[in-house]
Structure formats: structure tokens, C-alpha cells
Amino acid sequence: MGGGGAAPKMKMSDALILTGVTILVGSLFMHGWVTPIQINGEDPPYTNGASMMKGDVFLIDLTVANESTVRFVLYDENENTIDAETVTLAGGEQSEKRFEITDGGYYTYEIDTKGGDATLEVDIERKYMIDMLPFPIGGFLLAYGLYQRDDEESEDQPEVLDAELDT
Image 1: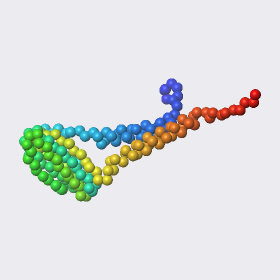
Image 2 (image 1 turned 90 degrees about the horizontal axis):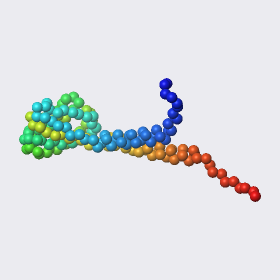
Image 3 (image 1 turned 120 degrees about the vertical axis):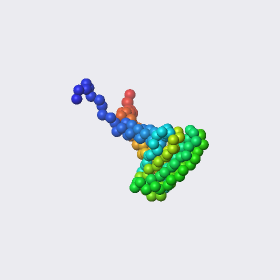
């Protein structure tokens, strides 16, 4: 198509190694990257959600900048209120709220600081740790690619033959 020359085909072992490393690095970012969310006093209540299974837990850490009354609310997928709590926090104080899920589905949480500034970190604890599944998959693909590469390298080298010479 317009390129000069031809590139050799990619070896299967190289494709497996590249895929395995990509999955492992992506999994590390997926689990390790928690960005704190800044909530300004004039913003509407912060709302977000996730698909949850029975036994999963929302962990919400909130640190307020000034004295605030904070309202935590959990809704199910039908917009029914599952849990609600109001907490008064002093400036610089931190509050941790745990919402444990009893039935699977999509759940939404809402945090209203009622005019106060705050920093929010949300984490989800999975009961069955399905979100850890990419780690063994990536490790298996990487190991299998390295194993195949060793086999290919041994096949590429010509076999050394010993010869007996008559003198």
C-alpha cells in the first residue's frame, strides 16, 4: 500500500509478550490510580455509581475543608433510597462511610456537602475479587510468550554436528 519494503511477520511469542505486558500494566493502573475528587461548596451534590454484586462495598472517604453537614445517600437502580446518613464534620475532619450491598445491581451514591468544600476518595471492595482477574491472565500470556520465545530461539540455531575425521 505505499510503503517501501516489506516488514517481517510478527512472531507469535512477541505478540503474546506484548499482550501480557499490556494487560499487566493496564491492571496496575486500573487498581492503583485513585484520583481524589474536589467538591466545591457551590457545586450540586456529587453523584456517581457502579454495578455491584452481593457483598461488595462502597468505601467513601471524605475530608472537609470547613465545618460542614454532609449527607451520604445510597440509591438502587430503581432510584429507591437504600441508606442515608447525615454527619456534621469540623474543618479538616475526615469521615469514612461504608455502604455494603445486599443485592446485586447498579447502585448510585450521592454526597451533599451543603455548601462546604471537600475532598472525596471512593473505592470499591469486591467480594469475589473479579477485578483481579486480569493479573493472572496477563501473567499467563507473558509467561507463555517467553516460553515460546525460548523454543523459537533454540530452533533457529543450527544443530551442531560432530564429525569424525579419518587421518
